[in-house]
Image (cartoon, rainbow, N blue to C red; front, side, top):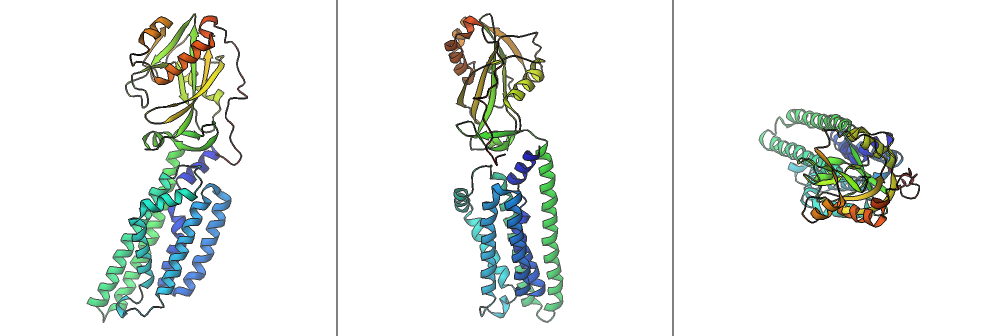
Length: 385
């Protein structure tokens, strides 16, 4: 659970931490000037970088990129204050520079995103971080645009009373920044709390090693197909195969006949634990003995699957749970072969049926060992999720 929480924090990072040095720079400059603004913003930026390096090292490069970018914006803002600008724009030079960078960032969003993905380790899905970042940029764009426009209008329409109105405008500007920052912190905290209670799947490489994790509904709705580990257990008896018909609401194989026991491995769960959980919750089976047969990679319309395939011949009474199982049936080899090309079986089962036939287990029925899986269970690399 600790690793999952850390994964959620990294894949749904609070954008306020990215923007905090820049926000402090703008607010302090507004109140006490550029020199004090640098003395406050720079130590805060350095402290955040160190904090992320030790607490969320997987997104350290991600944070470092934006820290350098915001420091660059601060340097340009400082230089802009030295330029001989018209009286109308004096006092808002730094805001104009930040607004220009924000506009450029929003205009070249896709190009910047591709560039960042080339330098950020692809250990975790970054879609949430990108979305949150751009939400924050849009919020900054509107706040700065309104503030600068209001400031310029006061200079033109009420030059005599500008200082009085400016103090009110300044207070509103600072209040909005603080309010939005607090709101974002609370919002991200609530979202993270909800994500912890949802189901998360590991993301694995083609060698079966964990390289990240993702919330399962996000994975199935993402344009990119991630590879997830799954367990598959074929139940055989007297040359027949026990199968399930997936419901019409199934996200991956709606209405297809499939291997009886099939499920995604959850984050922090072993292969054995996943099999035990699935057999118990779906068929009220406990202590099922199974034998490792093979592993293979398949592709569905929504994901890639790294399948660990097992066979079980020692069965007690099977009680399908109607919550998960719509229909079950024992199929003979003849019935399967007569319908194999009629589009009623999942592609996974077709692969598994071929492997099962070649193994000879349908004829012998000898699969009474409980394999330790020492050579087939993927191992989590050090420092991984």
